[in-house]
Image (cartoon, rainbow, N blue to C red; front, side, top):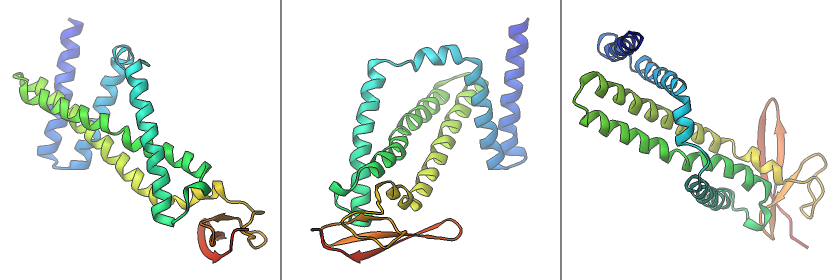
Length: 208
């Protein structure tokens, strides 16, 4: 009896979510409901999910590869954008690796999105098909927001470069202005501006 009631409630919620798309025609609300429903089902089945995502050697290998690719990507990111030689990058690369790792780890989100989408197409029962379709949309929405977060992080990546700046170095920065060496001929000076702006200025400074 309880199982029937739970199934009826679930089917009703699925019908309401899908109906919100056609009746209210509010896509952001529909996407939010899909994510909320998926989170609730994820919590409800957390024991099974934990078994599937436990720390196995496959996950370790995948994470190690992601970290390796992310570190290479982080080094090339600062080198191509600011022209800083790799030997002058240290802590900033480590911090940016954490950001880019999230980008590589969004691939499983896309995979699950595709998987649930295909399951929804193959499923003959309508409500079961709609349920898997909701899961697919939820994964797609999460991937979308992670992509937006990464784009925003790119705009403020100079803050991470501060991790490799020094007040006293062979760049000979002005008092109160930390600097990082770009190459053997020049450095970057970091200047704080009110309230939370950070400006970088390149200046000539030969390496001894």
